[in-house]
Amino acid sequence: MTIPPYLPFTDGPWRMTMGLMAMKPRDWIEIDEEYDFYVAEKRRLLSERRAAIFAARPGSEAACRELQDNLAGFLAERFPERFALEGRTLTRLADGTAWDLDDGPEKGGEHPLARAGLWVQEDFCLLQSAGEDEPYLLTAATLSFPTRWKLAEKVGVPLLAIHDPVPGYGERLGRPVDRFFQKLSPDRPVWRANWSLIDEPTLFVPEGHGRKDRDPAITAENAGERVWLRVERQTLRRLPESGAVVFGIRVYRHPLSSLAEAPEAAGQLARWLGELPEDLARYKSLPVFGEAVRSYLQKLACVAA
Image 1 (cartoon, rainbow, N blue to C red):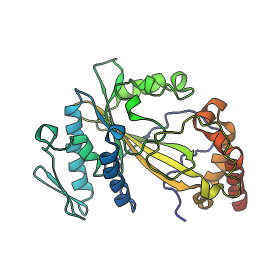
Image 2 (image 1 turned 120 degrees about the vertical axis):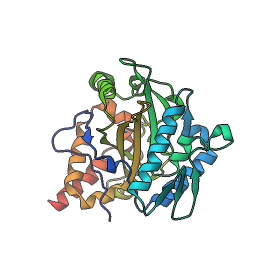
Image 3 (image 1 turned 135 degrees about the horizontal axis):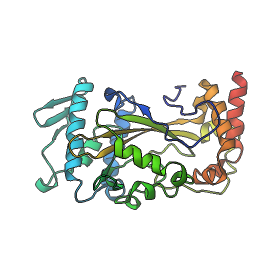
Image 4 (image 1 turned 45 degrees about the vertical axis):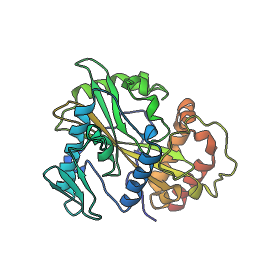
């Protein structure tokens, strides 16, 4: 079984931190064997659930087009075996699909940000500030694969309010995150990882925070197959012309049984589950699993010891 590529369970006790790490520019986008499935899901969701996964406020147009153009150039240079850019046309070589970068709603075409979202497995959120010392607001997004949040509730909302439901965020991370956004340089992108445990492998998961009821069907014996580790590789970079910050979200999900190949991570996650503050555990809907997940993870760690 494949080991998850990102296991953000560091040594030591659990702490709420930003956890930012430097990112090489060439590592902005990742493509793996599930590429075709992800982009097919994005096409389906954009067609069937557009209002739920796409939004762009007035004033975000230049930033959306800048992101599209930057991404097109990046893909052609970083993945020349997959993409080719000739003039203002990006072509996906596997199936010959071509996109006119100058097409847009004003011409009866697709929005640049929605179009760009169909090229990669990542989702993108654009955050913009009205000026120095002004808060950053979510102004546009293509969000096919949310982890328990609804785009319509966050568009036009500042960072602190976006994270208001997260216990402890305002007190511990609110100001540091705001300062980071003000100082982020276009030539110094960063990334971090965020994790969740959910009881389904579905990519589009807008619901589910704060579930309290224990699911008796999930036991220490079957948690490996019934529970999924969902990790978001989150990237942050500033667009040089518009100054907008691009928040990229790449979702990876693996059955908990995949941690059999990573017993140290299994043991660390088990410890963290015992250390999380009760309100944060509720926010993450961990009561659904009771002690089943911890027991399963502890068994994985002990078997390998």
